Image (tube, rainbow, N blue to C red; front, top):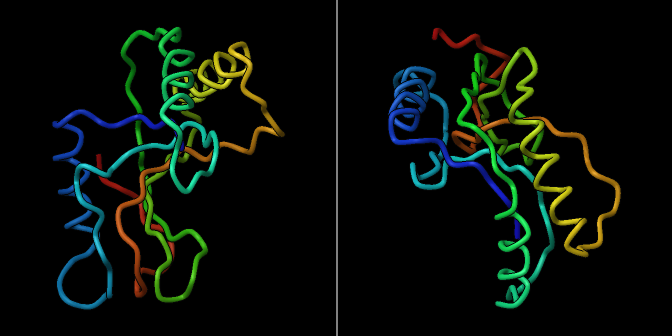
Length: 145
């Protein structure tokens, strides 16, 4: 189970357009994520085979205490994260810091901790949106905004 930020429809349309342009024509063997799955993971809470309903309810109640003004997030480059050779994720990320996004993440983690959720070490945060999985996409590419 994890908390994620889903982009609005206008941003999804722009992301899909950039994904199409990055892919170009035939060539890379890439499997695209469905548009309803495009997101930025804020915090991984727990791994369950079947998540208990009470756990989901408690985590959602804790996270519902977090309030933020709307903010913009800018992803200006695409690159491949390390993965299995045939299914490396191609992601969008930012050259700079996305401070409001990092602050939102820390607020969610804080709310979970305050609600009694056990927290191990908080992993490094690399805000990104996974576009595809596959092989054939090499290097890093700047995104025209």
